[in-house]
Image 1 (cartoon, rainbow, N blue to C red):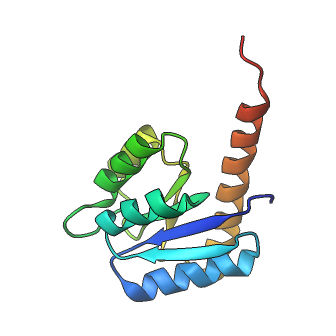
Image 2: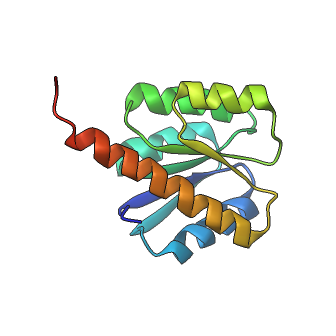
Image 3: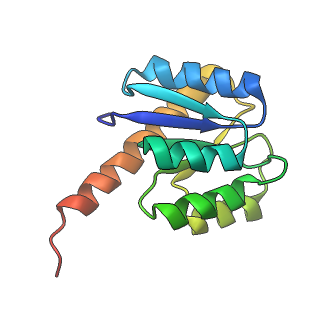
Length: 138
């Protein structure tokens, strides 16, 4: 896995943010992990820090994950976002993917499983970005 740079973890629950930040740090591929407790703060941090990866909770008060994803993509269509959820609703997952999320991670999985899934999602997402960047325009 080659990604490097910064990560932004967005969740309205502080213990989830801290837990996911620990998982990200354990991967050893990112230089800094920022945290936001809501969609508004997430957008401000994203605009300031330009992280390589955003892990974004689906269910948050005020500005939910779907709206935050729309706002992030409006600001930077190339941003890499992985949705975090404890509730799997197929329609919501499909909407997140349609809006540009590269995948989703279940927060209620055991930490070992989350780490494995996170590695795969990140690896796949950054490999696809690298392939897109090396393709020559036709």
